[in-house]
Length: 290
Image 1 (tube, rainbow, N blue to C red):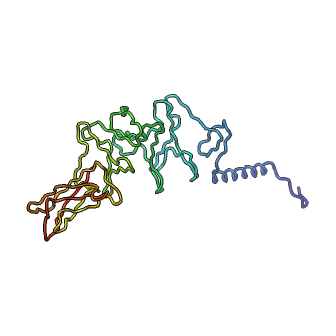
Image 2: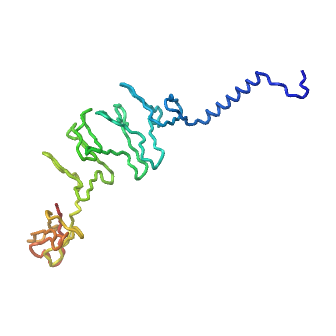
Image 3: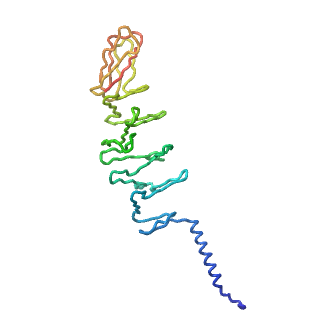
């Protein structure tokens, strides 16, 4: 039938086809632009989407893994804890132990592997790769080379505690470098490094040893002593012990005394029994202990 210029009503089939086409286009647009999903408390977790909640989400299992993240690729991350704000003091991942277990366990137990159980990485020059903090006067970080589940008792007021007892060649702490300092101990008023042994050796040095309070001095010709400044503007301890010895033979000449804090604080005077030479200077080596 002719329409005489009027629009012919659309059939039900054409309307249904148009509606389905619109739904397909909307679905395709949604797939192309994944967005974060805002879920209400109590909603089910949707896999493959981001979720935002106002209260914690908890997973509890008995005897199994409550939450497991597995990375099967070469560079993937099993579980990522992220603090997006550079000014936030929040924690990306925290393991909390309320009993006698472990808050966080990093395990590299494959015999043929060379992986790392726990790795801390700091990209900022002021960042910290890994930190251990003890709030109850115990041990901040414990490194032990022992049998499984036989850790030593923590030591009070200790930042880092290294312990090893499996062999005579075991090392509690091992520091190694190609050009810098393998291990450095620094103190303001205390002791930088303390070496103690009950029946063994307190300090063993292989190679050269240097001491800041040591050096060489030259006794002038026609002189029988020399003054050396050890601590500029300071003073040697009252318990300081000074050793000195000639570096060249002089007939009948010996060091008879090395006096700390003389003729002034921070100095030592090295005395000979007589003038060493009327023509040449005489080198003498010295060292201060205590």
